[in-house]
Length: 132
Image (tube, rainbow, N blue to C red; front, side, top):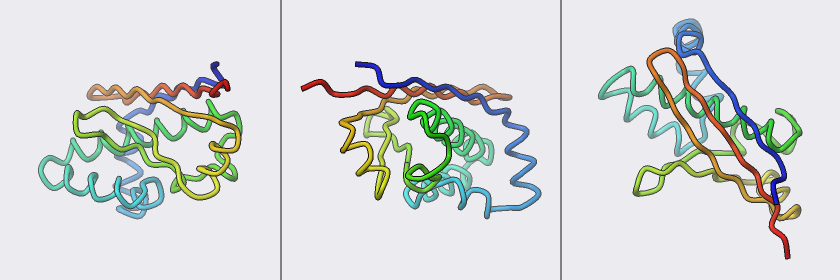
């Protein structure tokens, strides 16, 4: 059963401007540990790849908070969720801490779809409630 849906679109230039203004602290605020490693790896090779990765994760976390219906407040936080790709490149949502406990207690699972172009990144999140 569908519990919630959320979508978010991010203008790439807006994130690039923020990165130029406050530097890596912005990426560290938004990304979890594993996401940060992947962001840095992509950025070393091609700067734009790192930027798009960060934009996608920003959009996905915003879309997730909308689908969950609680916005960016406890148990939701930037670091309580990571969007990680599996070995085939499919993005998945990994929660931890209080957010993972919240999802488990409500029997919720989530799926994410990401897309980006030069100027925009888009995320769509579907949260489902398991029916016993």
